[in-house]
Length: 315
Image (cartoon, rainbow, N blue to C red; front, side, top):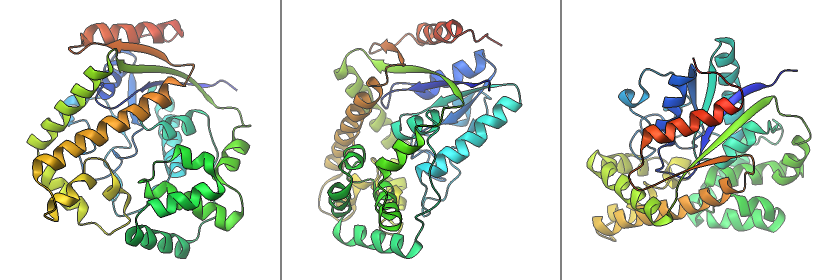
């Protein structure tokens, strides 16, 4: 079976992945599929850094701003929807261009991991969400670590959705998420993926770019968006997202606005460090390193050369 070509622009936050994905889509007659676990949410364009209409330059984008933030969304849901998007893009004779920094989404999709529909228990899920809201998500992370330390190492202690799903699967099936992923890896991937990693040459410059991005988000309305998110029911995944949860002490009168903004920057830098670690482990990725004021024409030309070496032709 002929494998489906997929270009994937990956790397840490605030490096220009969305912009590069648009440029590649324009040059290779493509469409962009987001691989960001927070950009899926409807009504949250600022904190999740969803590309604006003018930034998309007429390129069709998929899996951005479509999901109700009060409803759960799993990696299995993502793989199913992204796979459907990619099939549709190929049927239209276009190149799928994946863009995002959620390593679990990228890895699960491109490795074609299968997720069993078994293990669904809405009552158990509701119980775990209530527990996370009352006692904090760390208690779920500790429980997961007790029977599946490999998954606990991959999942951030604040990621309520993934913690709940991992515990739910194990309690209902007796199979850990790690075991399930190992089983599904035996199936060959239908994708011929080309990973292009985008990162700053100097980590300090990456962190500076992150700080500037947070400042811009504040200027464009992050605070009222965060207030709206924090009014969602406890246990909602969006409430745990970086850029929102850090404002809770501010709204509760426990800290000043400057302190809350600094905490957003700090958590964003920590997240970027984890992203860097995950994507740098992907041996098949070809990296483009950028400077503080990147020459984006040069960046896009380098990315184009990488795809052309795959034998993929420009439109």
